[in-house]
Length: 288
Image (cartoon, rainbow, N blue to C red; front, side, top):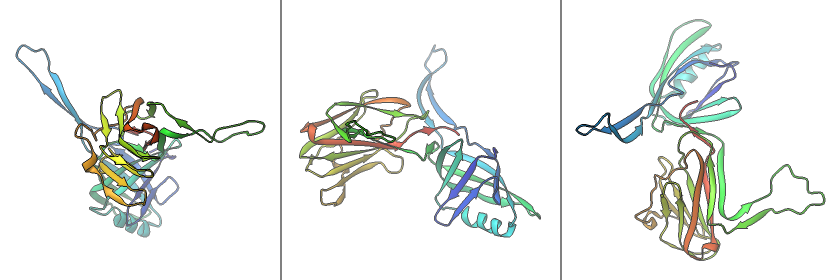
């Protein structure tokens, strides 16, 4: 591996850092940059070729080869302890000034060779969600008070906006990755309103909450793998499950496609009282 690449494996038991100048070093990873795709097809009589009816990306399994250096006894015990079976973990890769991570579990715990001075190991990890997500996050206000102030800034003799109210029905959010990314949308009522909605103009998918909201109330809708759902937070801070308010034509499989995404924000009554924020990783990629 590139000597500037750092791998970090972390869970509730502990943390392993694999770096060029550390007792742990990863020499090779098989399956880090590719994913496998299942393609469903239909063929009819007299048809040339076939028609693709669906595609799905398989979970990712990949093999890691590495080395353990002095102090071998301490490092070997730590590898065995942290790379334990059935423990949800995070694998982070840092390279070229960027950080990407996968949520993983061991598919095969480390097999370590005997030796003096250096020992070699091999393990296999499984990621149910196969795409690498950046550790950098995007939190963009798409309706309501939008932040305007940025550093660096020279205030000498100038007036400036800390924030500005946006009354536009449309806003653009950029996904810098090469695959669709799931996200969380936060609807905030600054005053009483009804039925907040986020509509993806390019795909025709929507998230519509059929609910009367009071000032200070929030509704959080998540399309993130393993976290899909609706959460209501009252002005007093009480948290409840709000799935019953999700309209039947809403789609929690909505994603932000690579590139620019045009979103429309609306409400059945008092749209001006609605604030909307979209939160997501800055990018998701199929391989690193």
